[in-house]
Image (tube, rainbow, N blue to C red; front, side, top):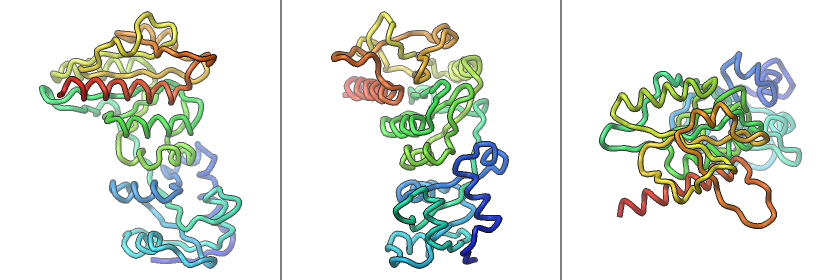
Length: 278
């Protein structure tokens, strides 16, 4: 089914609201996917898509866009370039395709990564992220370094914000991203994992920690906690962690950004596991 729209009608206004209105995204259970790789990853991972919006007029659509429109079993709506530019948040040019996706909210109570005796899963916790872009970047790093999932705690950034979706470069669609109120629910998850036969340690990154990250043994199942970008590790999380580690730094920088700290920690975990596996 294909429609063509040239005016800012009610549907377009709803889609525009998904760009910056978290309440509207949450209430409707919908969000926008912009960019070639995020859209490709959403399709590759069978993420539920409600509508494919595509550009009318202008240059001929690329072979990628034509293949998406010809093969994806999703209703299509053609929009004039000005409307597509607004939905793609591009001032200079209109994107070829923007997808309207259905939100998936996974319940942490049902989350059970890994198999006893076989896996030592890594789960990343990002506490109260301020920036959707930082959240998306950390989701991307978690995917790249083999984590099983990401848990966002507290009232942090929305993983379905367009900035987070773009920054994840599609990794949002390839791995579980869950929400939790705070340390209590994550401790319960840790205990459930232990009861399943997957003993798990909670390790937090903190610049004042007594031990360094490369001296810590990460070969067992790990919940890696990354603190808030502004305030760092909260006292509640420091108390919940089994271990705290710091990332040694040189130069004049006072601290690492949260996504960088998370990526470095995930790399060290992956490095140790590759080393000990040989």
